[in-house]
Length: 594
Image 1 (cartoon, rainbow, N blue to C red):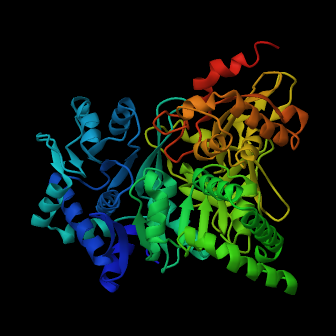
Image 2: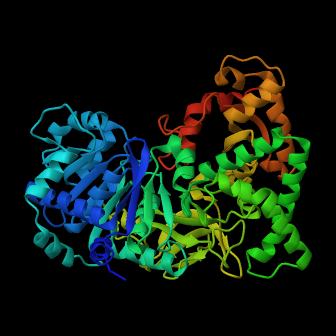
Image 3: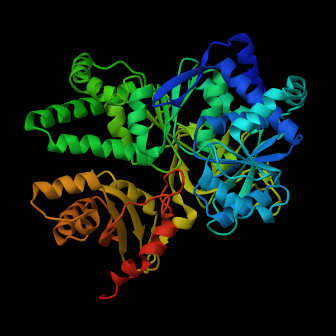
């Protein structure tokens, strides 16, 4: 296999030019583009960047949602031995300015007119920026601005394949390929330097475990500014599979049925929504359908010890499982496109109950664990090495150990080079022996399976001195189809409380069935009847918890957490610190009468 991503693309274009490579929407329908089309456009864009004066190791930023132009720009930058700097389009203007300045970016690709204005508002403070290139056309006239089409035309008129090849041939495994800026919740964002060697090590591991096969189709919808979606993009290029683009986060379900992917890297929020929708349909279905579904689900659960460990099922169970497949599982599979071979969940914990649920239905969902500093997966479940409740085993090239205080430590060729311009920050992450300190607490069983139990910084210590990891409680509560999200609160308090976000569709259907009048969801969330209904569920969950882990009181949020409100990260992970900050007055009021 090739030793860098761009070489893989160019070699594939030479040897298999007509192979399908990319799928995206054009004029309302999906079109498939060949490897040659992909390579030719990358070469034009790269030639355009050369004409603009981009040199080897120059940084070029991309601030956009996931779309085909993101990938074309990324591969063009990398083919020049340049470095791609990633910026989430949801970032505040001050953070955008900080990253562009801190990264020494020479150019920046932006998605549209809105993003362009945010950059142009601070362009006078960024003297290193040569050009701002807009993916979607703009009416703004400035000598600093080019449209994507103008850049591509510039490259076509000045095509320079010899220079591109010369630079591409000079790429080494130790060269930085990308700088990914991590969250700046405790200070300015930090730029993690990811090398070509980090990327290739990860891809070789995934390939050896049966992920990303040449005939696979994957659907990209998470931000390409994040390591998780980026390794998905690179995996498609490296292994010669098809990478399809969702239109946006709101259309993922529709695009799923159109693309019919075989492999889906996802995040817990996506699987939680699918689970809640299925369970809500079952709950509102006829008695016969409900009994049939529950029978099939129980058969699926009984089959798991055999299927997960590749052991033959007993004859009678096998007959029942096949019947459950024909009557229930196959129909559900068609709702997920009908071709899903592997689902992956990462970026945040997913409840073991939900993982068991999908696998019982014959939809393999494997959990993984990693971080920006390992360029996504470092630990992964996979066929034949899968244990529900655990994130899996280390990838073949990675070593993992648990420190005395329970922190998960990792070492291997995928561990990042360091923080750009922050040499003092790297030793805090990587110790003298080369172990990366994750900040997560976990344990390892005798067979080498690793379980993540929480973040060190999220640990709650009650006034009674009990140490509580909130993650397990939060995961338990979100298994209820009426509860979408949960954040536990109670550090230095007598007992625990929580913020609960309800599943809007499920709770409004319940309200309609119970003749509860309401103007909108916000009003419904404040209903005493809704609070009493959810309290019954909380009480049932509390029966499964130790007394010091129980939720005594809670606040029902009048809105779903969103990226725009800052309560979700771009990968839809709950930002607990922001949620607690936003709800602190209401949470503290729960303790006032004690």
